[in-house]
Length: 269
Image 1 (cartoon, rainbow, N blue to C red):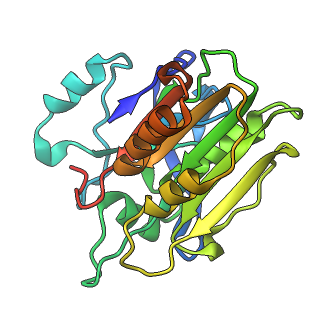
Image 2: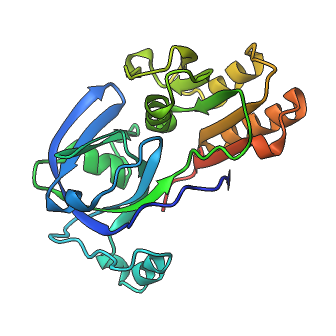
């Protein structure tokens, strides 16, 4: 579930990229760096720039990528035989340099050692492995006057929070609440001095992701001045957070954007 209006990408193309590096940067995050000639056509926008990531299916030697860059890419994708379609997932730019684009994958492995397509790709990524990318623009797009910024996310939204904080002006003020599986998954990034970054970590492996961030938001002492709130991550977190802000803190609905990246207990197709 979502309520937001993106800033559109600049001259997007379906890009063929290749892995140049992969490393586990914390217990639950693998960072994959992509490069290749295709990266020359990528236009960095900062903030929480996101994209469609096309990943090969097992046994695929080459990626069959769509050629359309508008909404028609999906119709083209569906017209491809399922066994030949790449997997498609949404990800956020963690960092961009002319020679590399970093993507952070939260890796999930169940008790039987199984993981989804994106986690499997990240864990096994080797230099030269291919992936496709279609830029989708920026999600963080304040459209109302505000004095401070509120960011709330789980681990899947950490790249968005990091990108936004790194792009905000030096005099920005606000609060950012980020829930993680472990405090060892914390990351260092540039945060304006007026933004209070609060990491919280789940105590037990069975805790439902997002509920601690939601509880932290409900208990937080927050400024009373007009706010722009941006909530990303697990669906119940972002919808519950929006409901709390509207009903308990009287924040106008027009001052809140929220994006449910995933739903607990529901595997992505």
